[in-house]
Length: 305
Image (cartoon, rainbow, N blue to C red; front, side, top):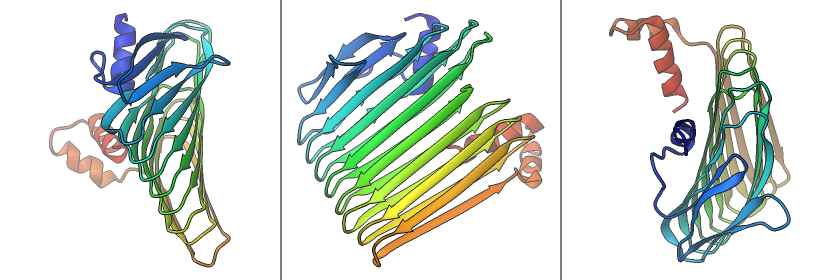
């Protein structure tokens, strides 16, 4: 990999070198490196672009990295990745995509990830999106994540759009089974004239199913964000959604809650808040020696952590 690709890999997957364990690194539309383990297999699809990640039942304390790098202007792709996670697993999956576009044509990555999670498994999923480039070509990213959570399983998702994406549609859909739990921390930073739309849909279908969804956004410049959190309680369940946003400059943020209960034992809660950075926060940090811009950046960093 060249220096640009190495930098993007660091941004989206916090990797300085090839990771330990199973991995598939996709660079400019092709698999650049791959490794499998005794418990985690990675197989290329034959009918369309993408891979199948197969994790054997009982796999514990293992990880799988599947970052995507685009450094060519004008490259547009749609990739389908399916995860088959057996019963009684405890694994970490690190995804993410970075686009560096220094040319005059638009570059885009659409990633469709589908998770089939067995019983009593724990999955930690980390996905970061990042864009950069000095060219006039734009950077588009449209991730879709679909989750089927088996009985007694937990999925903990940490998803973020770090910076530099001109336009994005982020879709997350989950069907949550008996005694299963979905946790989502979703963070979006936009600037200039960028736009971001996030749709998070959670269907609590099993008795004692749970979800805890936290969305945080910062809109700077003339950017726009539209966040929709949709929770359906279809059994004895509990669901919580929290949407907190910071608006700056001429930014626009729309937060839309949607709660639907079809069972009398469903307990659903939604909280939302949009506001600006408090002046006293900036003043306090400036008394410690930071400039106004540095203080602002520190506050945003802490908010999106």
